[in-house]
Amino acid sequence: MPFNPSKLRSTTFNRMENLIARGKRVDAWAATRLSILEVDSTNTMYPVYADRAKGAYIWDADGNRYLDMIMGYGPVVLGHSDPRITDAVFKQLERGTCFSPLWSPRQVELTELLVEVIPGADMAYLLRTGSDATSAAVRLARIYTGRNKIAKWGYNGWHDWTAPRPAGVPKSVLADTLYFEYNDLTSLERLLASQGDQVACVIMMSYGLDEPDAGFLEEVRNTAHRYGVLFILDEMRSGFRISLGGAQEYFGVQADLATFSKAMANGYPISAVVGRADIMSQLGRTHMSSTFFGNAAEMSAALQTINILREEPIIQHLWTLGMQLQDGLRTIIADTGLPATVRGMPVSPFLSFEEDAPDKKLIFYKETLRRGVLFHPNHEWFMSAAHTMADIDMALSVSSLAAQRAMA
Ligand SMILES: Cc1ncc(COP(=O)(O)O)c(C=O)c1O
Image 1: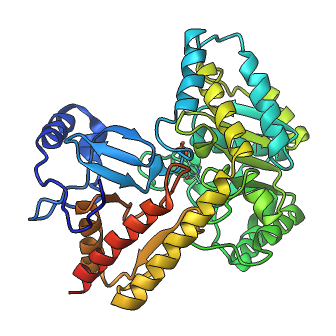
Image 2 (image 1 turned 180 degrees about the vertical axis):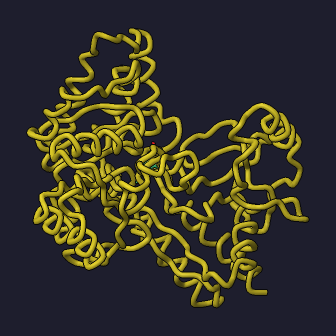
């Protein structure tokens, strides 16, 4: 069916409203989560529950279809429900998946593959979530250096040492986490000059909404090393997306340890810490294990996903789509005066609204939503191999209409 940007999505959400009411009674997350976008008088609800997803599209609990520009916050790099991954997982499930305390041969195959494709990876350790992996890397750095403090930038997960909000985290833990500014070497230098001898590692995302200044990541690494501090790159968003070997490969910077998850397995929960053998081999000195770290189904998903990313020009496709989207959005901003800036790397683009224009931001996202495009108002977007140029054209014509409404 040809796409018509002026056709609006349904405005009744019977099933979703019912699910929300039920969820709020028994699901602590549903009961306490801040809404992503408010409901307004035109009944534009940001979808809360999804029923299914296929390729680049997702259907909410009331059957409304959206072009998904979030893709699970980045993991779904091939597209939802890619049959090649589903097949690999099913095949493994038929043979069993939870073999603890025995390991699956997939574990050898996957760690071999990670060591092959990720620069500087002498060894890899497999876990379940991104927070598992960053916490493991920090623990290894603490063991290796015999120091407690951490210097960090960006989101690194929910565990105590990195929790974005302090409630429930002991003050003693909060005191061990120090923060520096992105693209501001002086802020790191200042921090390490005063406490460098207590800092175990610098851990950071390689980029967020802004690209690293030329040489910045390299300088962070060199500065850390000058103080005997390990350099850890958190590659959750960049890994298997900006390039097959992640930000280390793309920016030509070598970390001591790096952490991966998300796009590694097209939506299945698995993560990895990789890095220098002398640091990785400290693993035996601590207890770091889970009943589920050895699950073979997720490893099969990761093996299949990484091999597909290696064999097909998918990462190039993500770049091309992202650049097309960013260029189109820049044109819309120039044409309409929308108070927003196009940001992010092309593989994870975003539209940043000016702080004094919350009303225009709300209208823009409501209007795109009503026309069937699921952008995230407060987080980078992600595309997949399943998105086409026609999808991006559609997202742009919807954005153009939404921008005109916002500026009317
Ligand atoms: C850069 C980065 N690090 C760590 C994490 C934590 O991963 P998880 O949510 O799987 O625990 C995320 C998740 O969004 C992330 O984006």
